[in-house]
Image: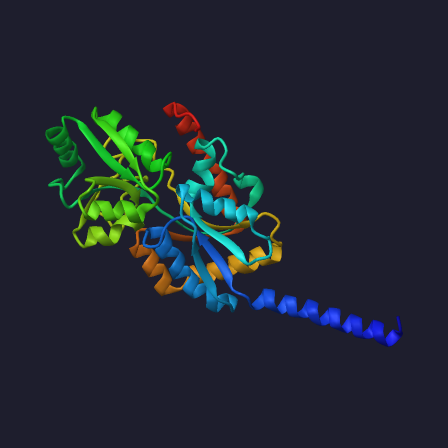
Length: 322
């Protein structure tokens, strides 16, 4: 091969590599969510994605991969190339809880994912539908006893979740035969609550807050160590005698293992800037979140501590991985 031919080939290969690099830098980023459109997690993802596009200089697309409490999205994240084009916005259930309650979830959070940024904590709550007369936890308990002889059903966004464990503990606390009705996400559960197909549900405050403010559902109790600023009149479960649920869940963003540190840091810094924006902070707070940026290291530590806490609670409950 002549020197001229070798030079042309080198230039051609260089152009192709540069083209691929530019495409990788300017192509869209996929932000996966493990639940259907319309729920609290989806709304949070769309709010952040809209702002992240300006910080990252590229389109950020929310990709809803609903099913199995976020398990399908987590499996998709594991299979994704670690090239900085795929991220996963999730709360505690998929990352910390599912690996404790499912024998073969199809992923190992510690091995297959890398923490990118945490941006908020939140609490779960019990809400009753508009079809019940209950305005407090005691009202709801009395209503269940009067209507079903102590038998009741409470919706939860996913099976084998913190909300499902809470339903079991509520039943034990009040000597009720309470059954959890698992849904494929909070959106279909909320649809049934609004239609009075189910008279109560346990989910995150972001799932309930707008409907609570509109008077369509009533939040009667919240988890966490203190009352929520957005719900100052609603007692905690600890106040009602259900202690042990003070360690609140988190929201974070994760990437496939092997994603370069520079890519992780760039995305993480973009998240920090977005959640510091007054309008974003105000909106997330109004949704019932406690906003607070966490570095990749802080999110990883938070997730590990939370998983350890719930491993003890799940073992104490007698629940067997399925």
